[in-house]
Length: 342
Image 1 (tube, rainbow, N blue to C red):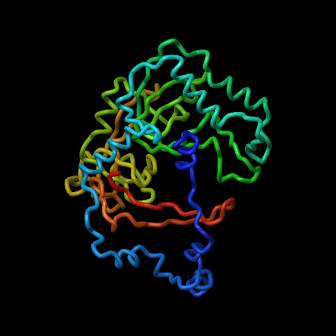
Image 2 (image 1 turned 90 degrees about the vertical axis):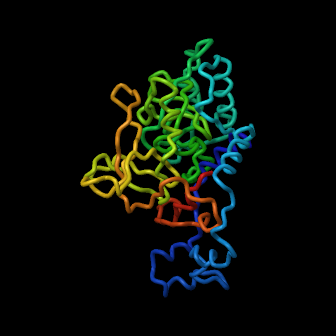
Image 3 (image 1 turned 180 degrees about the vertical axis):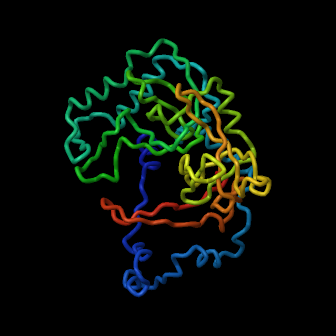
C-alpha cells in the first residue's frame, strides 16, 4: 500500500445513501425510500445477528490478535510503526527522503488544485509551502523527540490549513488531510517548521504534520511507553463521549472517539463518596509544551468498556449509528464499527 493510498483509506469520509435520512422523518414517509425487498428491520444489527449460528463465538483470542498485530508491523507496505521502537536519531538524508516522498505524492505536479472558496492554488502557494518545510535547518544527525497527543487533532500532509481539492466544490476530499489523531496517541517528532507552529511526526499508522499546540513533548521515551502500555484501560465504545476535568462532570476536557483508550486509575464502584465515574489518566500539555499527566473523569454509565471487547461476530456489527445532515455532502453517519483489540 503506497503512502498516497494509505492516506485515502484513513481520510475517507463514509457517506451513506439518502435512504439513511429515514432517521429524521416519520416511518410513514420513509418506506418509499427503501429498496425492493428491504425492510426497516434489516437496518438493525440484531436482524443479522440472529441469523448467525453462534454470534458470541470468539474468533481470535487476545494473544492471537497480538500475534496478528506483530505480523502486520513487519509488512512494509502497511506503513505501520511501533513508535516506541523508533531509533533516537535520524540522518538529514533520512528525513529529507520522507519529505520528498510526501511532496512527490501530494505536492505540486502542475495539475490544478483548488483551495478554500474554490480558488485555484497558484504556483506561488506551492513555492511558499515547500520553503516552509524548513529543510535547510536539518542537521547531519537529528535527535527524535517523543510525546503524546493531548487533544484530538488533524494530521496533515503539509503544515497548512489550506485545502487541496481536485474539484472546486469537492470539499469532502481534501488531499492535504491524512486523518485525525486521538488524545493519548504516541508520536515521534522528526522536524519543526520555521515558526515551530507545526511539527512533523510519526504516529503508529501514518506520518504527517500536526499543530504543536495539540501535543505534549515527553522528557524521556519511557514516559510514553509506560502510558501506552498500561494494562488496565478504559476503551471508548460509543461514537464520541465526554471526558471531564473534575468529579463534578461539568467541564469537558475533550471528546474521546470510539476505539480510544486510557489507563484506568479508579472504577465507579470504588470512587467512594465522590460519584459514580471512572477516573482515568490523560496527557496534558503544559505552557512550555512539556508532557505531564492529569486525572480525568468519565461517567460510569457512558458507552465505555473496561478492557478491549472480545472479537466476535456479535461485536463486529454497527453498535451505534449517529447521523447528521451536512450542507456540503448530505447525510453523513459516524460510528461505523466498534472498538475491539485490533
